[in-house]
Length: 415
Image 1 (cartoon, rainbow, N blue to C red):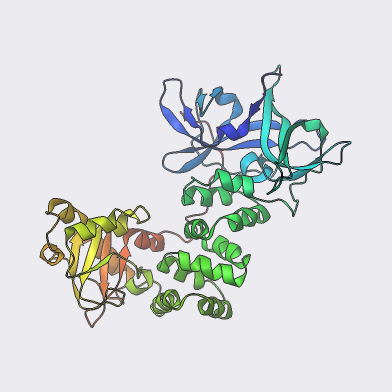
Image 2 (tube, rainbow, N blue to C red):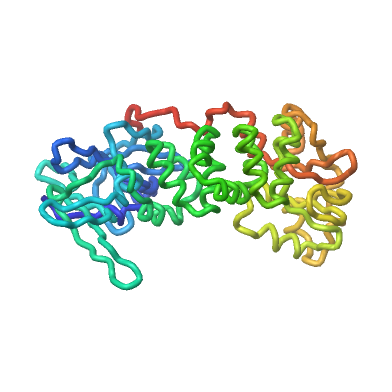
């Protein structure tokens, strides 16, 4: 056997080809757990390659491992990874399991997995790094236990936690977490999702298919479900609530903060395929007294999507939707070109017509194409701004309902 390599160091590692060009990032390790307690074989890695695609890289394609990086060789399969029933993902499924040690009254949690290469150059799981106890008064005990001495490892363990995998996901984007969750069995998917904090979970839910959104939301208690809905963008929360039974939706709306619930009730009053049904009620809205420096300070906020940050809407008070009289839209490019003290009303796009909340989807798409827009203001008959439709809202409703579901498995090797 070669020197033991611990897999946690590979989480997020950069994969390079022999020429030094970046191929992708390591997101997980695929193993095949043996039924006879022989050391599991490592089958390969899950790589994330542009644009946000997860692929399977056979372990034989890895030329070398180093701190924070790997080097791959040969051709790489560019089709999306789809986990098979006989496979186990190390980071997503194996970490956080509680196991015992043969002949000892010991129980610890898996916090890392060690692999070694045999004489035939196959990689196997040969040891588990375990943590036992720990707390306010004493330090946690850790030890590496050979695979053959591990007892009590059951992937269907209802007591499995999610602390280690959630810690690894701390800097992972919501869309990548959502894609990983879709590969997992329902029980493990719910364990990990519910262990995320409310804000992270809300962003992950926005990236999941509606069926999976409902599955996860139903696993939460009512109070937490309401908190997570409050963290979601109003249009995404509305789409999710519309998938629930009327009774369940009513209970959740009652538990939400009144202002947040009011936005959702307003959106629910519009037909799904109209501007009112597609829009967000929280675009960037500033009153007529603001200037360029005020607008730039807001659009710099990192949590804003590019579409939302692309323009600001100028209104007379109040600035909460539905606002006072709508004055106009100012594009980000105009903000970047103008002196900081320029007043916003002097920069509004006088040629851009807003759309009404009852505007149907086909007309919205023509409007976006005609004006090369990534967002458009939605203004009611009383000249009040009620929200904005973004290009991602439009695409979500134009694509097939199951577009988020990964349907392509492994295929032939591609260069």
